[in-house]
Image (cartoon, rainbow, N blue to C red; front, side, top):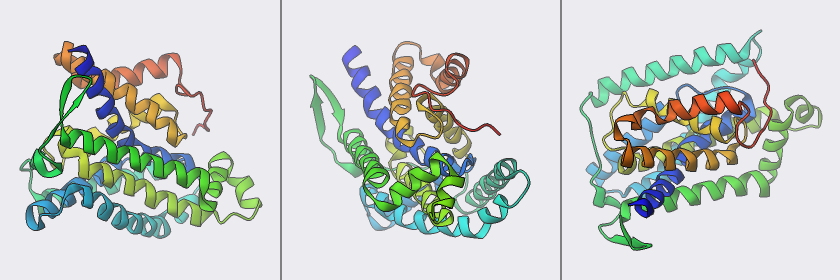
Length: 291
């Protein structure tokens, strides 16, 4: 039982890392908390659902499609609205209101077009085999989803540490003013960060039916809360620290579900409370600017 719980927690934690890393990337670059993060993940989930049920497209392929579409949408959202927010007296507070408004619009339109009926993707969509890990049997959908999450996280690492745009992104995350004064096109970097952040959320959305169960238009707010807890645990403003937060959350959630199931839904709030109480800057200790 213990071995199964630990391995399940790691697999789930890798997915949770993917679920939160986009939110942390956007905050790290722009210092904006995307309150619509869970709603973009929800859109990715519905995109994968309709692609599979209508056209037989595997959710693994939907991950790529979702990311391409959301990179474009993210860039459009940035250039259409964010520069105006940055010119205001209090851009951080206005960004909260703006993304909250986007969240409400997405949810309302999703209810109209998708209805409130729960949907799900057949667990066999990613394969019907069972994998043996340390003597324990796991569905192929969980293993494949975890592997896709790892690939996405590795690509984020490659982007940040092995590309010119990634170097510029890390410079902006360190100091926006210094990056701008050194000739970096801050708007271009931020637009890419917005697009990639939403793309990662949509990628997690395509895999969410295998870890989170059914999908509904109202799932976004809970996912945003969970994702925020995950990035706080790792370190707010440090995208790769999200991996630590995701693994801790995944293991904690699985242990709760195995041994104290009635408390399982409180895991993100308990972890958030403990981190804020004992180490507010997150486990990696990155200091961030406060509003």
